[in-house]
Image (cartoon, rainbow, N blue to C red; front, side, top):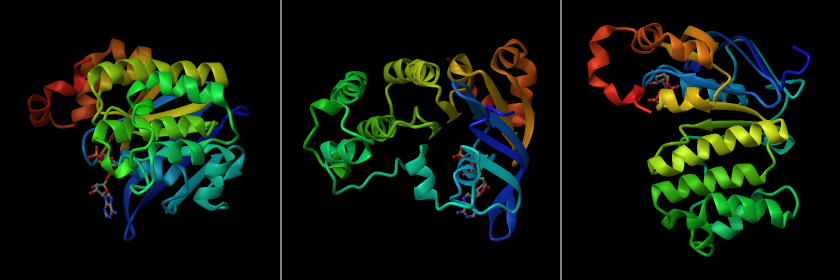
Amino acid sequence: MPDSLLSASGLTAGYNGVPAIRDLDLEVGPGEVVSILGPNGAGKSTTLSALVGLLPLMGGTVTALGEPVGSKKPHLLARKGVILVPDDRGLFHGLSVRDHLRLSRRKPDAEREKLILKSFPALAALDARKAGLLSGGEQQMLAIGSALLGEPKVLLVDEMSLGLAPKIVQEMLPAIRSLAQAEGVGVVLVEQHVELALGVSDRALVLNHGRVVLSGSAADLLKDRSTLEAAYFGADEFAEDDPEVFAS
Ligand SMILES: Nc1ncnc2c1ncn2[C@@H]1O[C@H](COP(=O)(O)OP(=O)(O)OP(=O)(O)O)[C@@H](O)[C@H]1O
């Protein structure tokens, strides 16, 4: 795909020589949102780490913005606009909200900053507070706000909904979708809230035990719920333990 911003083919990666994800293919074009779904331990975060070069590949290839990932140090890839918001949020606890936002922006852009603070009004009021003293949800807002200020070309977000109130999540996911379309950003979302994620995605893949067990357009996946749930849970015995995953 000539337009692809991020592309993986046969991606295999893991820890201590043991693959946690195998043979994964992924394409993300400008303005597209692709979700990676799956139960705990399926390999979602591992996939994100491998896609941005934080984890060396054991097999396959990954290309971001036309260059092979691995040829560049992850922070240089981030500077080019491939930005990961990790599930631990990646903040510096001793730095204030204001400092994070300043350090994240590519260039002074008061309008963009205003727009982002409008999405997260709580942050504006916490301007001087150190990141380590913010609540979990506030830290998540800061991490996402900082990533957006960095003018990403490819944005990868690991569990955006973690710690955020449902109302904020319901506003943020469509806001990220709009940003993707307006600015031609390629977005990869890892989400536990399957229906919310599919609601803002073009395509999705479902991982189970490190393998892609289902992939397709978000609309098709939503249409065939029983196939989606079977792929997601893999074994029926987990299904009843986790009824909230499919709640929107
Ligand atoms: N640093 C590590 N060293 C060894 N094994 C790891 C490491 N990080 C993750 N794993 C293992 O790799 C597998 C995939 O983990 P990963 O964090 O990618 O799953 P996930 O789908 O993101 O899970 P969750 O939804 O619980 O965050 C799991 O079996 C996990 O225990």
